[in-house]
Amino acid sequence: MPLDPWWGIIANPTLAHAILGRLVHNAYSIDLTGESMRKQRPPLAARSVVP
Image (cartoon, rainbow, N blue to C red; front, side, top):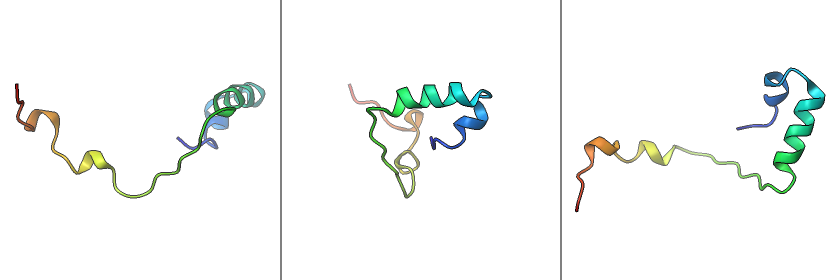
């Protein structure tokens, strides 16, 4: 989820900054593009189960 909307979701900007600072301090940011892989395979109920 992008970081920008968090300041609107958390009403207190100081609290939002503190929370996000702790979350992203040692995190890697990976921007994904393209179609979701979940859309390419059938739902779990449609797949056959092999014992």
